[in-house]
Amino acid sequence: MIHANDFVFEAKSTLSNSVQQGKFTWSAPSNIALVKYWGKRAHQIPANPSLSFTLSHCKTLTTLVFSKKEAKGLSFDLLFEGQPKEEFKPKVQKFFERILPYCSYIEAYHFTIDTTNTFPHSSGIASSASGMAALAMNVMALERALHPEMANDYFTKKASFLARLGSGSACRSIAGEVVIWGVHEEIEGSSDLYGIEAPFAIHQQFKNYQDVILLVDKGEKQVSSTVGHDLMHDHPFSSERFQQAHQNLSKLKKTLQTGDVKEFIALVESEALTLHAMMMTSLPYFILMKPNTLKIIERIWAFRAKTQLPVCFTLDAGANVHVLFPENEKEKVLNFIREDLSKFCQNEHFIEDKIGSGALFIE
Ligand code: DP6
Image 1 (cartoon, rainbow, N blue to C red):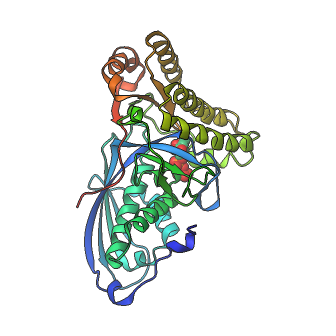
Image 2 (image 1 turned 60 degrees about the horizontal axis):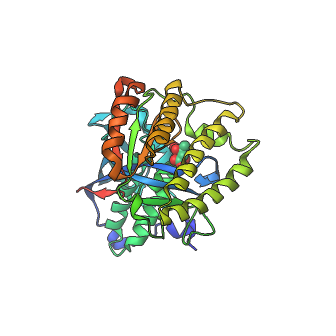
């Protein structure tokens, strides 16, 4: 079993001094959880295992420019779409502080980080997963320059480990189409420290699975995920919920292998509603769904009953609805979305996405 200590960087003096300056660019996608991560312990350890589909089009592109400096200490400039962005700095500062025990070399450089998203900034789509994943890949690219003999498996695992310290769900945006994060007894190699690609064959049914994101509310959320996670500590249903997540993951594992879409739909929708039920039963309680979220859900249910098409929804920690369906039903479902669901979106805005395979080295 891999421990956090295995990710501590050990300098090899000759090489470590030789990397003076450089630049990398990586992209990392967003991901959508089917079994939800909601509740965590210290050091970003999840209270239960989660499983997600990696997305393809919604992603962050991050360039890391680094140059060696004299004085030791964390030092960086942060740009968003080429312009300085002070508001984003505290999150990155916190990320660097958390990864410092594992990446001591970051104190020896000054960084300029320039980041852009392919999705609109105010879309309500969280950029923390893709953003932290893209940054973690860049940091690991620098580490690999210092340790060129690094194995690919270590690179990927440590990238996911670092991304997790930035934002839990970010560790599922590194590698693989279907990613599991958190120890689960039926999933070999699963870990609380990083995400792994599902170690079983995924049924053809889910290849190129589509995810259309309906942008119901593009505003800032009233309650952040971090606060929501915290509220699971004294939550009256938390232990049942954490247990249920284990059971749902067992069931979903089977479903993903057999291609049983009926069971898939039941599990995925139940997970989404359970996530929001946890929010509604926290103290203080809160609701992130909007009236249009419910209207969309009702219409998806009616459409499914009428057409028998395997369309379902999931939700993240917000009002937006992710509509999931197989690639071969794309035309019919997109028509339904255009004609019947888009009017419930802000400015009729939705994003067509699908399953993707993770972070990419750009240059
Ligand atoms: C509802 O990963 O955003 O999307 O670890 O505090 O950064 P932090 O939280 P975050 O939580 C995501 C919660 C979720 C479910 C999920 O993605 O599994």
